[in-house]
Every structure is written in structure tokens, then in C-alpha cells.
Length: 287
Ligand code: SF4
Ligand code: SF4
Image (cartoon, rainbow, N blue to C red; front, side, top):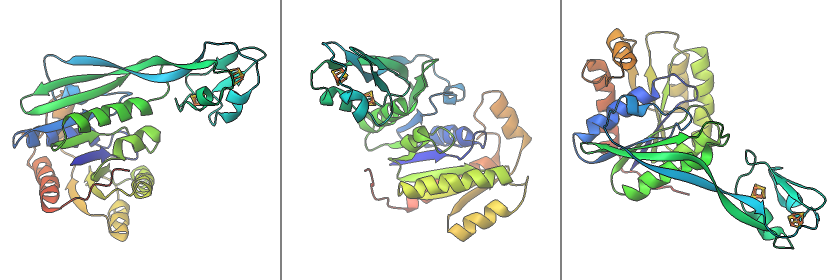
């Protein structure tokens, strides 16, 4: 089962819930925590481990290796405007290229080949029964999605049959979609503010477009208004917990500590998520 924690905006408490839940679940048996927020992974700050194994991740980029006639076919087939045909050569823009390979196949001169282009790394570690996989995008790389896909794919392949908890990037971009695409259940973490509501709606639309089941947790539930609660009720989205602002949680988070031992309310929310997962039989909907 894959459980993804997502949110329409950053700073809602997604990592707080994902790391604490992963740690709690690992006390019941093997579990896996995936940090798919590859542009700023921070799960390791709370799930501290000593050593990690690093694996580099690369995507395929087209490269001119034969003689080019400047026919422009490669430029025409590229849907992402990532390759520019000049008189007798081409220019590739790596930050736009989606590694689809269409230009390589279409080139009538067979002048293009695919070459690996490193974009980041996946680190693997463990903490007792908890396996940790964390993606980290290299500085200067623009496209996070292939790395998110790689780290989620690695976790689900290597830990098939275990509970895999994915800490997704915030927002509703391609990288956020890649982190929830395989989820059996998406936990949307939100807050009761106008910004929170706006971004929650976008996140719900994203999950529904991907045909994912969603539940919600409202963090800092005592600050703000009732609009988020009313929206969730209208949309029929189960709210598994309301977590009021609590200084002990904020202090633990700021110190890089797991907060579950310091807050009974956090524990209650996490227990509710576990109970919900235990009670339901999920149908795999991997596209
Ligand atoms: S691999 Fe695909 S995205 Fe990249 S330049 Fe070629 S056609 Fe465009
Ligand atoms: S399709 Fe091949 S030959 Fe034509 S411009 Fe592109 S690389 Fe050159």
C-alpha cells in the first residue's frame, strides 16, 4: 500500500505527519518512508540515521553524433521546444527536454543518440525497521519530476508488500503529480485559511484527475475560519484529524525531533490515519 502525504501549498505540516507516522508504523513492522520533495528534502532531519548509500539518477538527453543535414525534423517532432535545428547541427536545451526520445527516432539521418545526463541522487538508509529513501535534485537542475518518479518507483519496487509512505512535494505541479500518481490513498494536509482553502481545492482537483482516493487532515485547526471544514464536508472528503496549534509540536519540529512522543493530539491524528488504513481494502489503481 502506498500512502502519499500531499498539500496544495508548502508549510502545512506534511512532513511532520509523514515522518511521525512512518516512525510509528515501523514499530509495528517493516515500513518505508520516501522523501519525494526532492528540491528540499528534509525528512532525514527527523528520521536521523548514520549512514546512507547514494545512487546517482540520470535522464536520457539527445546528442548529435552523426552528420546533420539541418532538415529540422527533430525540431518539428519535439512537443517541448527543447531542440533547435540549425544549418548543420542542433542545440538541445536540457531544462526543457522531457527525454521522450521522439527526436532520436525521427531523425532521418540517425544522427542523434541518447546520452545519460545526471540530475540528482537517491539515498538509502534504515532506522530499525524503517527504510528511508530520499531524492535530492542537483543544484541548478530544473526538472524534478524524473527524480520524483525514480525515487517512488525504487521504493515501491524494492519494498513491495510493505507500507510505503511518500512525502510529496507541495503544490500541484508535475512533480507533485508524480508523487501521488501511484498512491492508494492521498492524505491532503491543509490549514483553515483562505490560502489553505484555495490550494486545497487545487490539490483535490489534481487527485481526482488522477483518480486517487483522498482524505484530509487540518493542521493548526484552531487558527483561521470554518471554510476548509465546510468545503471538505461539501465534497465528501473524510477529515481524519484536526490538529490544533501546539507549542510542543512546533518546538520539536524546530529542534529536528519527532513530535509524536510530545503531543497526545498528534498521536490521536496519526492513530486515526492508521485506523482508516487498517479498515479499508484499497484497490490498486496504478496506471
Ligand atoms: S527527447 Fe523529446 S523532449 Fe527531448 S529534445 Fe527530443 S523530442 Fe524534445
Ligand atoms: S532530424 Fe537529424 S538531420 Fe535533421 S536537423 Fe535534426 S539532427 Fe539534423
